Image 1 (cartoon, protein in one colour):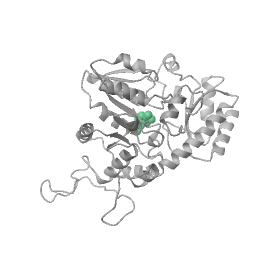
Image 2 (tube, helix red, strand yellow):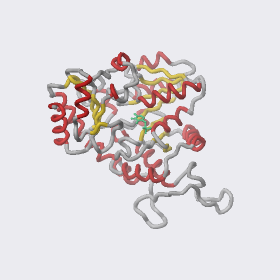
Image 3 (cartoon, rainbow, N blue to C red):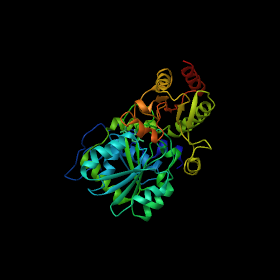
Image 4 (tube, protein in one colour):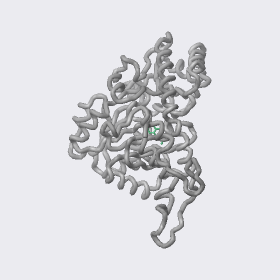
Length: 380
Ligand SMILES: *Cc1c(COP(=O)(O)O)cnc(C)c1O
């Protein structure tokens, strides 16, 4: 099955009761047993629910993985993966990690004795230097938020295999339409399904995907023991959203390119960060591991004034000012005053998050309307 066919068909064969074309929403907490242990594969919906199973199989198939496990949010998925570790274990991650991942690592799991290092992952030497006998996991993200840096997953997987570590890739920004980390050597892939995967800004969900049966058993055990599972209605909505993933990602990428090129030529714009540009510092890696470059574009204003950026994001009409990304509608954000507010100015500026940095999640509207919208906001 090719990708576009998988988005629509993978995970669901047939509905035996009515022949429904869509997987039924099994809104039930428990399933009847004929005699103790004699059931149809489902006992209690924390452990397993038929609607959730369809979604888990669907997403695993898109990522070319064998096993999928859905969680109540992307962060609940991250929580489950870190619970594979024990006190004293060390994780090497990136210094421009998604803020919520940084928070759960440092504010929750450090308390339980797990040690996290944050390095420049674009340079694999920085990763290798930190590896010691306690290192158990490399946690990567590519493209990163909001600077859209690209990390070489194949390179990391070589380091990880050599040192018997687990390589985890947060594939939220790219989706399996743009890259499949398992094919590049990752052991575990996770997503915030909230974003591009479900794609309609109408739910919060996460997923963990892997190939290895032992890891899968452990994640299933954690999923059931800790219980951060999504309900069947949300699983249905996610499945419905995923059916158009390939079409949406194609249009996100097309619109993203048009907007990135428009910004590059605008006299009020300083830098534009988009991995499709030949002079993006990791363009060669992006070209090697991605099928297209997606709809995330960040840029700075030439003036680099905080107020100019705040004015800009307050004056767009179609680009709604909101947290999140990856929905059909365009969004804009101002990291310095929103997602990165808690990070001291000197710290955030080291990674490029200057006062005027603006992040766009380019939607799938008609791109002419989006350009007009930006043009108006620049002129106010
Ligand atoms: C949003 C996001 C998460 C967290 O997912 P939630 O569904 O919001 O819990 C993790 N990683 C990345 C890259 C994200 O964008």
